[in-house]
Image (cartoon, rainbow, N blue to C red; front, side, top):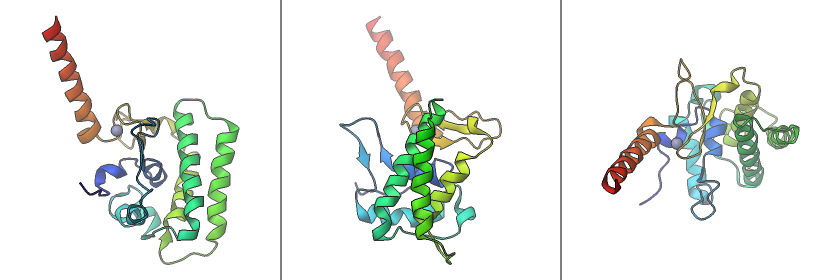
Length: 186
Ligand SMILES: [Zn+2]
């Protein structure tokens, strides 16, 4: 099956989190997949973000990351994941935040002038900085099924899953399976 950047892959609710979520099963060494490892998929992310990102109005049309800026962009992605994941777990350190600010500033210095189309790396840096000073940190969550980071934009902050139609249903099916297994072995 060929890979596609679908709406589900933009469940993060903030561009910086969608970028962080480009690593699937980040903490499962055997099954971890980095969707940016394929340069074609990485380039395609910008166009998909223009369609699906919750922040698409904020940044306007995005350009893919220029080849020479890819390493800095990946550094920002990792710093973003580390800082916000630790924040949700109430374990973030000054060093995590400093790493995020460093990674963002490297990128912002490379894009000093405003351009018609915003490079994805510059937009991601701004998205991460906005999120770091967001006044409702309790809206930042980790999906219990896939471990993606997401911003719960629902009115009553009641979202559990990054995407109900994917992770919510998987959890429901799993509960059903566990119940049946219990009944059979009882
Ligand atoms: Zn999920």
